[in-house]
Picture: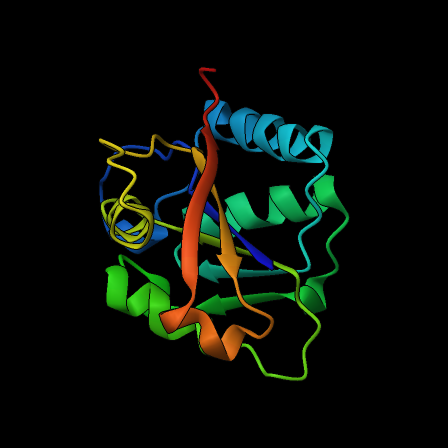
Length: 162
């Protein structure tokens, strides 16, 4: 059994200039720390984080990593996750090597892709994962190479407003 944690980036400043360069607001930074602490309180231990390469997702990822004591070499940034759809997120998961002992993977990305990904894989019916919202999925498999065919189940969702 594996765990996949889907995280939507925290609240970002309004869009002026290039979208990929938008930074987190002060509220977004506080919410990222709060949500990382909530994961820790719930007993989740993230082995590796895959993140979009946008500034807001990288900031969110760094804050989660700091709170959860995830070393930098356990984080990887992907251009393919920037505004990724369901297929893009699934294909990025394939970067995990069979010999890696990763029990829990976190993906930090964007809407609507992260919401669609959770809904498509678990039939959850989530309207929209809010900024810094988290969806936790169980994936019935021993190896990440079986991700596409493995049974997936939504365990829980939570957000800064909970």
